[in-house]
Image (cartoon, rainbow, N blue to C red; front, side):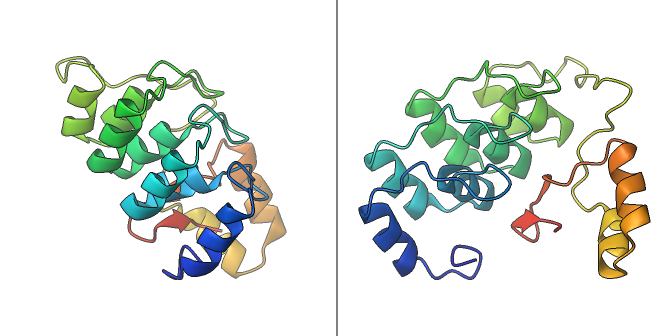
Length: 171
């Protein structure tokens, strides 16, 4: 909440209390959220305090994957310089390069070493590509239509996809 509203003072107090790698209900760390939102100041503060670069949220996504998905080149560069693993895989077998490739973030793809001439990675048939704005899920959630939300999830929808425009997940 505080980070999404730009209020970072309580976050720094929380960090000073030693909550470097604490997770939210979706398994995301503050480092992952900073990476997804492009918060260089917070990312640097997390790195200075020894945040674990390799932690993965429930879907196996790392901070570098969040940055790659969101097109945050500066953040991805800082994470690579801090020795984040570029070969870590999520539950679908995707690596950070795949997230960048799927979303056309050419400079991040090049940073991570995947030639742009290669075709985008193919996701397992049961999993559609991550969506930046899952209108079906948003409409179902706004209407409190539990059945439609379940249908979306059963069809392989991604609740944890970070929307680059909104700076967070749809829910």
